[in-house]
Image 1 (cartoon, rainbow, N blue to C red):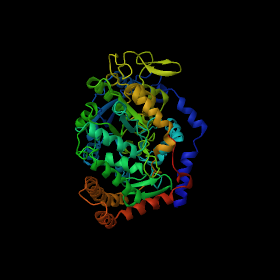
Image 2: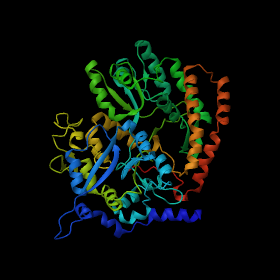
Image 3: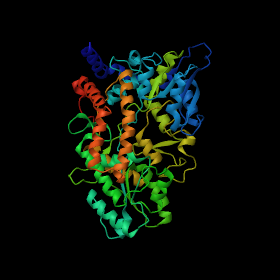
Image 4: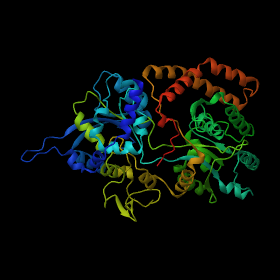
Length: 530
């Protein structure tokens, strides 16, 4: 039975008939045209949809055009982005009326799908040529969600291609004005920052946001390990980072930097506003694991306080073992973070299937990301560019923002996000240059996640029961190791023993067993980001 299921999953991905894919070019108006000659048009169907708000209403020019093209009306349920998953989970778990279509995450897919709440899209795929076209290009948008028994309770959200959005940045002007070259190794970075700390005693050479794990992840990646269960890119096997020798080396390196007062003493609790202040006011000289899209804004604000301010992205540093640090690759798909699902009990299944497929058409992706030709974008030298009225980082004199127009990629129901449009909308010259450098080197500095392995709800419950207290325990101990409250020799062994008692091996075995059951063509590192 299991082998039959494996074959079934392979066939779905491989057998995409050319005739079906040709239907992807069908006009959007035809797909949704329900009018017949001699009859008055019926009132449009009203679809109740739950989506993140992105701090804007759904009444822009593009939102209205989206309704016109789909011949549907929408009753939008919007929750703030940072609170969305919590609120939608509460809504779906309640006894009240559910939306027709909504955005959830993989945990909810695995919870609510088998309960009969979510529509299995598998039987409808032959009616969704646009979606099949993208599945053919990026199989992971299917594989990351499909269950072991072949059920497809949602579609993973995705960008048109992947990227390496985060990395290392240095205040190049600070290094240069003090007679230093930009460091290429962690040893050189340590020596340089130590000198700069002496010159600027009030500085916080390395600062961070989003808690201690965000910074420590950089040290783990420096030694090609991870803070939890991860897919080892060299050995192609799932491992548990905290019990590896390289993990200890990473913690020792972080402690070395902390003891020299090179890491902000408040690294575990620094607020984002304070972090930004540290960078733009000149107190921070090295940035780890942060988004390149922030660079131009930091540069602009920093220059107002110091005309010499010069933020420069650099490739990851090399460790004392000769390993070059890695940075996480962002795949085209969200890997279950944002999933589109349909209410199995909706009265509008046919309309929802057509709507979902239409969102993957070139016409709809152009609408939600670029807008209307001649109005919000034009073609120039074979590529789209926003018109002069659209305010972007590269066009600061524009009079209206992408959000106000609805060309921010957020109209519709998590329509595919055009990465080219994103670069034109939100990125400046510095960030784009850094992004290009990292993307070009992705094969050697990128950390790639492992193949998607499906778990049943009872297995997920077991993983959560073990890993939630385990993750909390690890974070608490790591802070104490880095700050010197715990000894790297005498206390490390007891730390390791406690990890074993808390049951990490059981979860690791579950991952390895699931990986072993995958088809052979999926037991490999997916390095396809474009």
